[in-house]
Amino acid sequence: MSDTSTAITPADVGVFTRDQVEMLTARKLETDWLREQRMRAHAVFADTPMPSTRLEDWRYTDIKKLLRLDAFSFAEERVPVGDAEGLLAGLRARVDEAGEASARLAQVDASVVLRELPDDLAAQGVIFTSLEAAAREHPELVQKHFGTAVTPDDGKFAALSSAFWTGGAFLYVPKDVQVEVPFRVYRWIGEGGTAALGRLLVVAEAGARVAVVEELGSDDLGKAALSVGAAEIFADDSAVVVYTQVQRYGRGVVHLATDRLVAGRDAKITTLYTSVGADVSRADVQCRLVAPGSHVDMLGLYIADGTQHFDNQTLQDHVAPHASSNLLFKGALNDTGRSVFRGLIRVHPKAQRTDAYQTNRNLILSDGARADSLPNLEIQADDVRCSHAATVGQLDEEEVFYLLSRGIPKPQAVRLVVFGFFGEVLEQLPLEGVRQELLRVVERKLAPSL
Figure: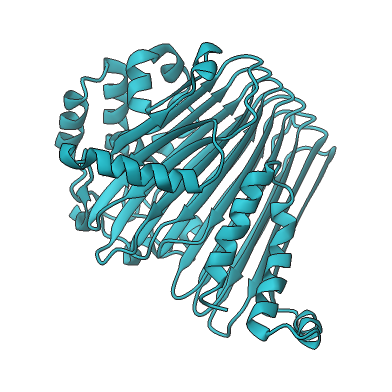
């Protein structure tokens, strides 16, 4: 929902003008449908003011104070040809550190600079390429799905993404093809003062099985940078999709994401969002259960320290009967770190026999930290099982004392308690290798501050 009471200012548009959209789509020789989609999205973006705290969804995140769109240039093809080999070598090393992968794709700012897909997967009909390339080479697949789950009407930043995305990643897994090793997508911001707009589209046909790990990163930046992302994930009948995102941008980055999950009959989608980086990170994640038997697990883990501000907005949207969802988000907050969680379970009138649960728990590690948690239910059917819970609490001193009595130094004891707190989230991720990676991410985040 936009704040229509506020007049549009130049800061609401910045350098992201209609002329720039036209130059972008012309330079990339895009087809008419994609050009028209970009132009429609820009019209919504340009007509929508920056969200204000008068909007309930933005009440606890004053984005107008945290972000000015006229402070950024548009990051577009910033990879110098002469540096390509060195950049590729560095990215390969970074991606290889992440763990095993069936295929890899890396994007720096606006440019996809690395793509690897084994021949055996390509022979089974798997497509893994940049979204730009997929729109040219597989227009029927892309047009059928792209922009149908994330639309400009999802907010100003979804409209910005839809108008200005570049590079992007596209993964298509045909019917009954099952890939056990994760696909890896890596997005890197290389320079402050720029805006990078990535995009992800995953399509799993009936009976397919696939896992995707997307990592977002940068160095600490002396000048602010903007990351605007959007993901659309479709699981057709009986498909299984596991999506893990690791957001570990450096300081100086503002990250805004709009993600949508669509689960078909007897399909299962599991997502885990891990946020440890950036100055400001906001994720608007919604799942839509459109057929009986569908199930979605939405998991989240976040650790804020310093002045970091993390905002998670979620929706479990039950359209069909006999479907289920479970959400569990946990966060630890230190120094003057801040978190916001607003979650909604919505059950439509015909969605009888829905099972839906939502839990947000926050661990406060310092006097200056704060967490706001607002779970909600909107039930329009009478034969359902739905519940929500939220807690904001201090560290359990008895647990810490027990570890101290066993000779464990206090910083290590506190870290162990926090590890145990996050264990309930990590144990639900059905990827053992990725789970171990995330434990290392948590350990590195906690080590300097505890």
